[in-house]
Length: 176
Image (cartoon, rainbow, N blue to C red; front, side, top):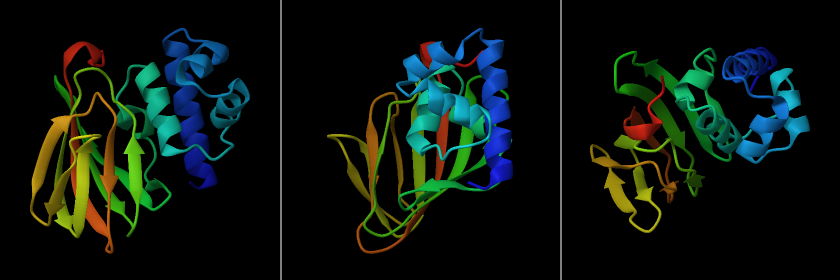
């Protein structure tokens, strides 16, 4: 992530944290990250993983898209790129993403907020995806919907996979 995007993410993260009355220590402990790492992130430094950003969003009880909305570049690591396309303002909230996974990539995603559902449509390539223990194989044009409030994964074989992904935030974890 470039310096401008890191600074934007840090300022937005701090604003969300303070709006909910969390101290640095409280949020870091709840998200399972070091307080010093959270402090650096809020200062626009560091190199946060997608998992770290997801954990912070879950602890702040906001959709991932709300946390990264100000950032206009793809977020990525370990062969996976994700870009927020749009974020709905209705209830339930729906976030739409473009995602691309390199060949021979396995991405373990942590559980989203309670009640969240994920739908993905594969644009190109082949992809194994879904809740851990119930993964399905998709080809271009296939769509899969599953409960995203439990750990899930995305796995490619010999080719790139590109997909559209939506997350619908329903249930007790609905953002305010």
